[in-house]
Length: 276
Ligand code: 13P
Image (cartoon, rainbow, N blue to C red; front, side, top):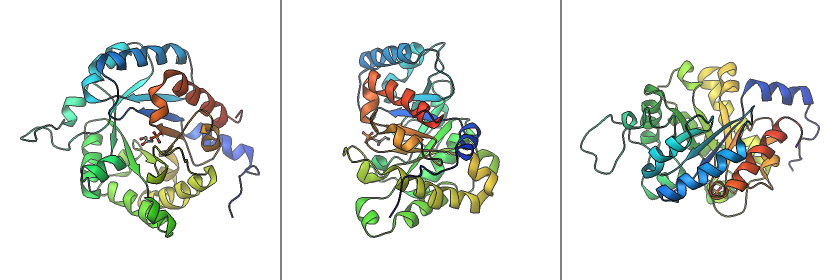
């Protein structure tokens, strides 16, 4: 039986806080026209003006990236794509290459479970995309997570650990530091049923950071940021951010409303700083 880690030593929580800058990103998925995207980010920008101590990113659909980039001029809000191909150019109808994203945005979501499930992305493709993003100086947000059946049959740690190992194949330690991992249990995505904070913390520690430590050693494993994703709202963000292993969130539905996303960012930062 897992308990909330209220007994976690405060100094340790703060050490972790200072070592890894919190990072909350919004994945807009297939929502928002160009005009709607500009309106959303303009509102969000005003709500988050002057906030420090946390990184924030929005990831609109491809057609809105340029307009959102312009709407964010002079803002510290980062901009990300939701996917990309690993090749630089070629006969890949409908795809977008890393070279096309450079100068347009600085992050890219890779291996989201919706891409794995609906578009056949394999661990090998995720690895190629991760390496391509790093080679082009883009911050990859690589998604991992188990489905409901895997969760119910006790396979979560094995599944997530294997996804992390596969994603990082051939990635060197210095590059690995640039990667952000999003732990998104598939059963928690869009269901209104988030994971329990201490459970997510345990998976991040025992499956994600444990594998990173095997690959790169403890210091690098402790430096890599890990977000939680799946039904995050203003009401539950603190539960995740107060966990020592969780450095941020990848937010879907709630990131489509500026007030909700801004509340998630502010409350998330407050919880991470021990004011939650
Ligand atoms: P929801 O926040 O809508 O559950 O989506 C999570 C997600 O998939 C973010 O990438």
